[in-house]
Length: 134
Image (cartoon, rainbow, N blue to C red; front, side, top):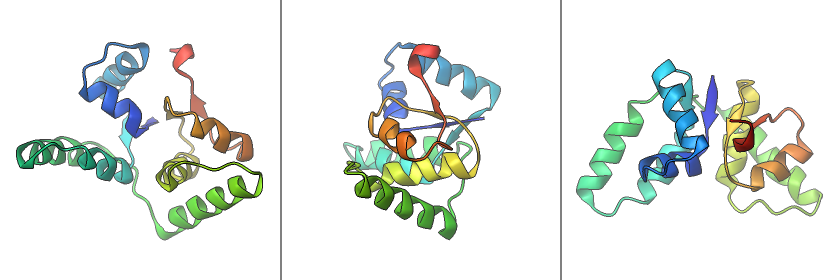
């Protein structure tokens, strides 16, 4: 099982042919790709109109996801704070929520976002699936 970060879903939606999107295609075929509910929110932010919003909503609410609990959100807040204490500013608190989900479900996170490397430096339980290893 792999948790897929929003930036990878965006590349996949844009049909960018990369090692990361090819890996995602394979994991979707195998049924091992997972989505964070907050990624659905982020993906819907980018809708360019009502029709695209409906298409995105249907496509992404049908995918397997890792549900977040209150404990997940608390861990995300703690991750954000721990990074800040080390002088690291994470650009989006949503990234801490995605990281907390990966940690909670003990699943690797596939991302292209450098903020997750900073989070992983603070929290070694966060396992990143590196694009160069695909």
